[in-house]
Length: 306
Image (cartoon, rainbow, N blue to C red; front, side, top):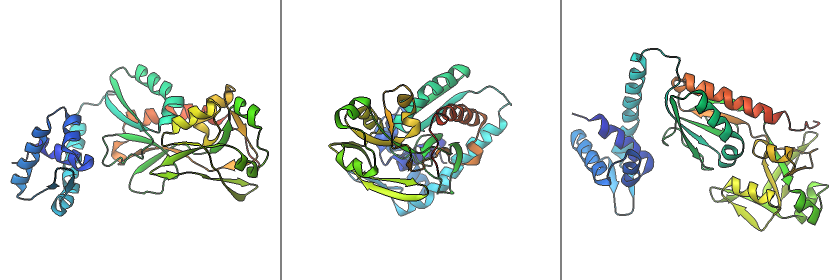
């Protein structure tokens, strides 16, 4: 007979590719996870994982069975929610993935106030610039920049008009001068973001509907967007950031908006979740709270003539 706990550990081990990480997440010992997987394999009479001292991966049989295991767990969870007495109280634990800079500079206060408003709710905040897989990673929802091009998940708009902007600190501009054209950026130190090993050193803009691109170079780059933000505030160079990330620093004078006549790349902010059935009252209330905060920030973004 299959054990629900074994099934859950199998799904998490498949997502994390590690018995040790699965054990740590579940508060167990790695040997306990290994025993659970072996028990499951014996019950199914198949081998689910190919194991070695350095790697763990699903076998073809494991890959074929994984979606059915996930469906079983989702069905059980849906059934549990169905039989619970109706309640307007927001409770439980909500795991939220957020881009690091956005989370720390704009949304942390929103999350704090949201939890105070709903004292029976716990929030697990995961601040990272890694793109979260809402189907595999241990999150309920994720806030994500970019257009929704994947129809396999649900995307709720939070800040559809958000875009990138050029900024630098007053101290940097005093030392090196303020660029007057996009071509001037070649003379400046660009603070660039690294994602999945790729350096984002080509910045795109439009002016009166005509696209422009400029290649930039600089002495500092990072795979952490907040680090780039901090370096800009400290006067290390010019950077190309989401308006939501830097809006407060621009309003407080710590950063200055550059070449505002150029329209930066559109990067709408969405709330992502795997399935429509996961759009609980809690998730919708959170979306409303974050959207209200973002709308306030967007009101301060100067309009661009198109």
